[in-house]
Image (cartoon, rainbow, N blue to C red; front, top):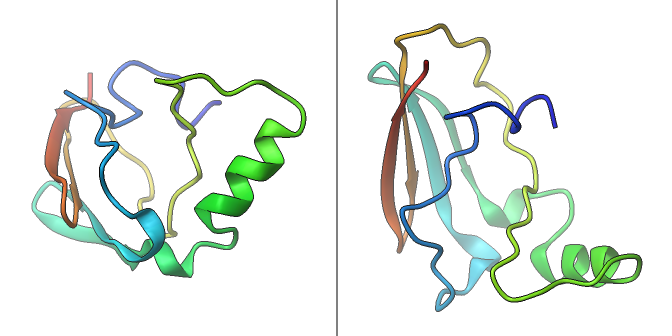
Length: 99
């Protein structure tokens, strides 16, 4: 919760793409113009179908729910004023400025 619970710290939106296969997407995090994460969803410790099955075994998932799966290593600390760009293959990019 600490890593995703603060304002501007959970890069989601402005919409959630539902028509994409999440099994092997390229993703990057670019902090102040420098690539700090560069990985694929296929290298996640647990794949999306497993996560959905596991989570739904103890709580009801509803349309529109968002599951934060974690993040590849490398992001490090961020400071107020930093710009973080998240790029996901087949979806696009989202840019947030840290408050």
